[in-house]
Length: 201
Image (cartoon, rainbow, N blue to C red; front, top):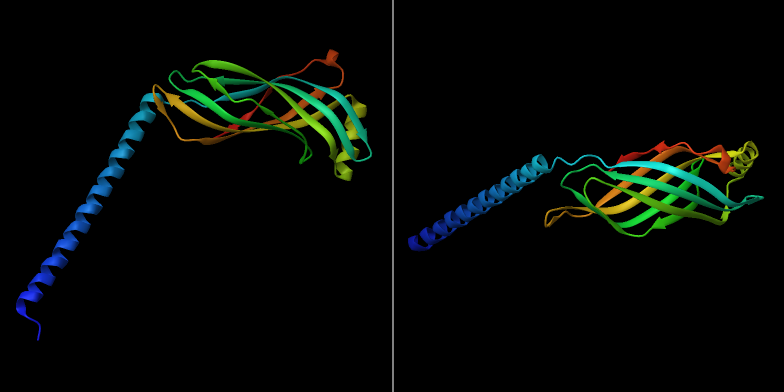
């Protein structure tokens, strides 16, 4: 038979363990609530606005389509507008792809840079197609558009960014920019029409 004192000790330990668990849960909930309030306050104070992207200019050089293989240089000028009054942006990694009919035909990158608040940055992109193999129908349609004097493309940008407000820096986010229906003419005399892009963060 167990000694009565042993039972009391075990009961006290069980009550103490339950009490400690309750305290730990309450502390955890309090921390989550405080962090939530802090994030909400920062959000309301900063009120970040969406970054605006456009394709400002573009041209094609060295276009050579032989069989189903493409060589070309796509020069693009992207405009990035940060409309925020307090939020600056660090761009740590930037890749730019050129697509035609759901196939990537050229790619390039942009050096990392820092964008202050209320700033317009102009990004010069050189996307290269070097012996790029194309699907048969893609090659055929690309050749047809070439004979028309222009090519309608989609420009996709992927970037790794983080934000800076005062001395505070956020964690990293993936930024995706989609610029559909970018029309590049083979003759520069035909001009270029600015293209607005969709931004996803």
